[in-house]
Image 1: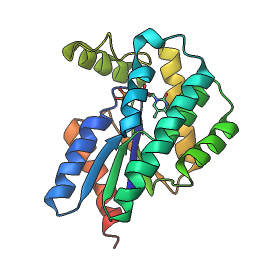
Image 2: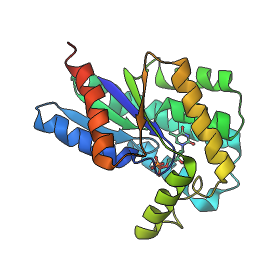
Image 3: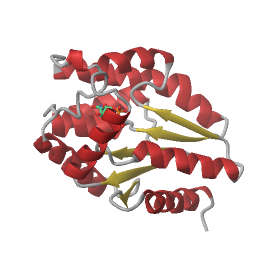
Image 4: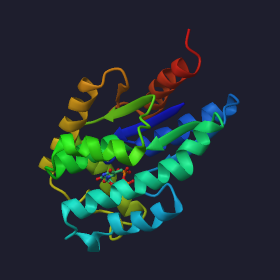
Length: 212
Ligand code: TYD
């Protein structure tokens, strides 16, 4: 079972994912928690380049191919082998992030992005995508507070530094994708307290793992 988590910065994806993984493990499932960019060894190098604020003049096309390279390697080296062993794979961001950030955010052609994604993932699409949906100004305030708390604002912040308008386009992009792919997307209200967000995610995941 392959489940991806998507959402704007500060939507609480990573925290919710960890809580979901813990619960699934307690219930006896083998779980792999992974993320993009940075889910493979090569990905670790690419992540540093991609999220470094000093790389702000990265051309949108160059940025795109780095995300795709990260994904191509991640799918083949990490995700597919885990799925072959019946492990539940929970991935923090995946191909939808590219359509939304590089398409709705950077204005690259979305049809082309879909084709590039399809090639990068070798046809591997998630069984389910949980979209943690939130007002961008709430998410950005949270992300900023987290960066300051972790003293990483100088290291990771290229997208946090974008305008509120950019993040509004990202949210709209996600909601549009969710409407286009209803069979795969589930929208979670990420403005709720974390326990509620986690409970909602678990309800979806458990219904997938043990369908009635
Ligand atoms: P990360 O620190 O993982 O942020 P978050 O906690 O919000 O997931 O940074 C990942 C950043 O990379 C995020 O701003 C979105 C961006 N991104 C893209 O632009 N395209 C992509 O294909 C992916 C996977 C991420």
